[in-house]
Image 1 (spheres, one colour):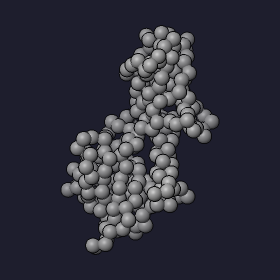
Image 2 (cartoon, one colour):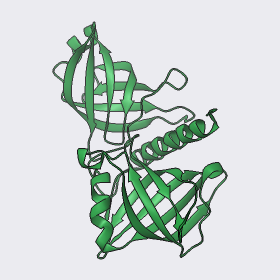
Image 3 (cartoon, one colour):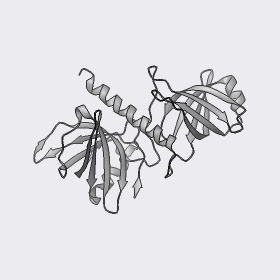
Image 4 (cartoon, rainbow, N blue to C red):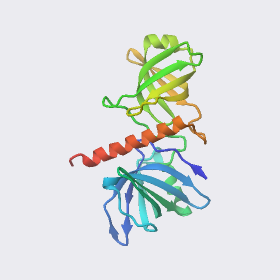
Length: 240
């Protein structure tokens, strides 16, 4: 059994539920994970409770996927599924759907096992980061430009780049909004590029794609899912 990573911020599920010839209004949800089983796969989707579909356990549904991470997934595709699980919360409703083996190929282009949901922090919820060399002698504070479960992008002042230019592996401390306890992660600097008078760092988290991830990695993934659900709720509340 292989559990896939949460999706990118564009990788949402547009679920159209069809009963006989009657189609209900579609509900947009966030792909939480996909498990490829011996026969077929299981898909878990989180919906904002206010706009979640009302499905009976065992109900046959038609899932319409759009917004995947690969060119092959640029157009919407559909697969038949069966509702097997539902969990209601104040803000989030989670469903699981089992999809037969013959439809698994439809889902594959929408799943990036190496990818992660990426968010761009805004002025209302900035994310601070500290980058520290392994020997602890150099530490740089910065703001995160974009963040996923696999890594982050951050802008470093040119004078700080002069101090960090020899560093390949860094200790990364993240301070997430509404979370008093900082996250401690290890990362590799994969690229550096000029960004105006500053330098943009692309940092990959070590061990992010492995099983048995540490608690801070799981906290980060939870934060990313919550941010995407908040974005969905904001879109639902926005005047049409």
